[in-house]
Length: 316
Image (cartoon, rainbow, N blue to C red; front, side, top):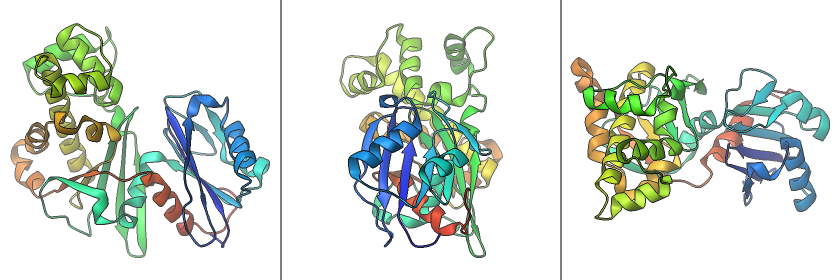
């Protein structure tokens, strides 16, 4: 992209974050607000511009949903917009739109080692794919592939694959979780709302994900401990499946904020056991390192890198 300023936007189903990328490549202080605070993305952008006085030349947006063309729809929020419409209304050139987890994947080479916490040891192959799994409001999946002259990002809807039960106990649990005749996806169970569903299935009681975590860290609620241990194990099983699907010998990064918010209630041992519990491929998975990403607004670094990657063209 030619030198200039750009709006960086990380748009989630719950919160949206805007920041200015200045002409020197510095990312400004983010403005964070509930996505529901504005009826449309265009209204949110206009409000931000009016409040800050910024008039960016370009825009790069990370959205919680699939990006398959000019028209974009969030998966867990009613916002709909088009890249060409943003370009026409605000004069942005280029407009770069990518999936939010794809933006985090592109950020991986840009982030310092201190942004990551080891979860499972291993030896990363720098020439292999790196996989990002992001449990939060939803469950995002993306991969980063090294190329001869940079990186290629692979978006995915891997969070919506069918979740498989490991044993009879989980199969019984799934029957409580699955609406009659409905598809039970990984996102249904392994997003933040899914932790609350797991707790309800094992206890018969309602609780928020935060309440489940707090109860698991206390001493008086075995159902909360069971829910968080089951969640951790299932996430590990899915991560191992996706690591094999993407041949992610470059490493796996858990980037969603849910495991971090769970703190000690996240059962790392259960995660690791299920990650490698793949029969003949256990040894293959033993070599793959897994890390937790703990960095504020990592998608911004990926968006800035994506703008650098792009040729000068009106809309991407």
